[in-house]
Length: 218
Length: 138
Image 1 (cartoon, each protein chain N blue to C red):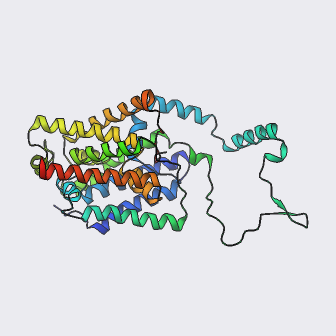
Image 2 (tube, chains in turn brown, purple):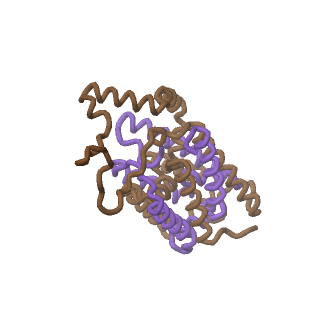
Image 3 (cartoon, each protein chain N blue to C red):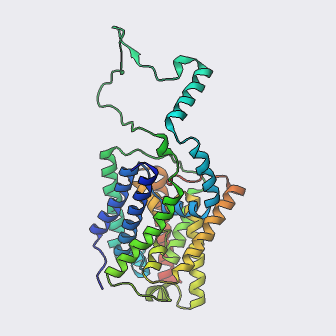
């Protein structure tokens, strides 16, 4: 059986996964969000059908511009360039480096296709299975390992109860907090989002507290 | 890769890489997880923190845009519930999938719990909480 990766290899693996996804899709991924959308697939399909009506970004942009022009006049429909004393239009002069203003496309604001969320969950299974088999760790078993038996419970019925309650807390908590260890922890903290830093600090802190309680007290 | 097909391919690649990495780091192993949370072994903690550090630097260099999100009333209680559930069951939403893929069949119960919890949260949010749906997932 192969040993687990050293910390630097794990860091590189998780970072490469997150960076590759963000760079190639201009999006974040989150496993709890994928679960949420797959489990509510009927409602998500309805949303996708509505979004499909506005799939052509140019049509939507033109419609918004026309509506804006109707409401506020033609001059407000498009961003106006600053006229120069010579009468030609140029980009406004800026001192120093230009501010970071990455382009926002409509497509990147829409949710990822529902089928891609199903694919994400299935691919995690395949990736995990390949890792377990190639490392010689794959073994069908009806327990969660010796450590779970020692720290939480070794009684089968109590184990089922603990796993189910733990799962409910994970599912409810991640959606209430708006993300999990991949969404908040990797993607959100990687973007230095305050909400993700707060959420990650709290769920890690609670994990530490509960683990110490299970290990030392209970 | 920003078309529908491209996003599908990107999700398959991300899922394979995430599952492979998480399994090889040892997040699916309850003993390793408990050693991380009780600071008996810092290897997995350093793997996670190291990944975040690399991502922060690369995102800053590439000027990857931020996604909208604010600290709403559900963030802190949700994170507390999640942290508790992770420490008890040994699974965040991706890990039970990896555990089942590694042969830990009781992790199917964790997945069942996650399914119930997610559906319960959306129901409760629609009916009672009326909070933002989330900040990370799109």
